[in-house]
Amino acid sequence: MAAYCYFLESPRFSLDQENTRKAIDELQLFINYYPESERAEKASELIQILRDKLERKAFENAKLYYNMGLADDYRAAVIALENVLRQYPDTKYAEEIEFLIFKSQYLYADNSRVYRQEERFNTAIDYYNSFIEHFPNSKFRSEADEPEKK
Image (cartoon, rainbow, N blue to C red; front, side, top):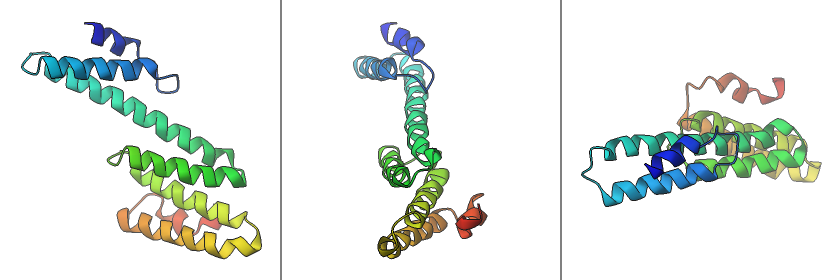
């Protein structure tokens, strides 16, 4: 019941997630101690709900750098979005994350000094190729094909 109380205290994704992490820890501890309990399956479901909340928070925080729209923020967006993919490799946001990584790198290169642009555009091309390889029929495909028009 204590673990469930932490679950109930878990706030929406945009707020501090301390109680979310506590709830996950407590629910996992319950599952470890009582794997045969009739409530173990429900505890697993609650853990997945909480992990989805943490995943969304990480994604939205990373996307914030892209939305700020400043040259240095685009580089920060690339790093933060890559970290989300590393932390949540099976994320439901993967398509948008890979697109935003490409677009952020493209905009970073476009806003760079001329002597740095070639290297940075080449990196953007690598991200584009990875995006197209993973999501050939993406809803972001047309914008990825012509990023300067959007």
